[in-house]
Image: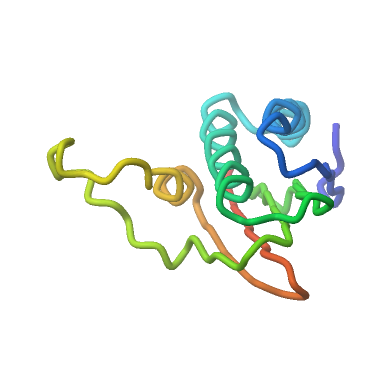
Length: 139
């Protein structure tokens, strides 16, 4: 069992083939933190969407890595993602109109919506040349 004050961390290259490694990292550690299957599934989707957006739109330099940190604080699990891509604050992005007919909707654009919907809290900061996305899931 991971102690409450412990933090686990994974550093990966900014490539889509890193997603399976990230998923396994989340499963292994979030279960140890006491996260149930339903919350784990939602958290995996949110992290997958965030990482995919960083890789596809963040313009990361080849040598830059993405860092994923997980820690438990009380009854909350924090997932902190750091990257040196171009600044992007997903908390400022308006939610898509999911009530519009399918043929009237833009392609894509649901990733950030799922992040906001599945996580209890989402925070963004740009500091020291890094995007810092903190996603919080209540247990």
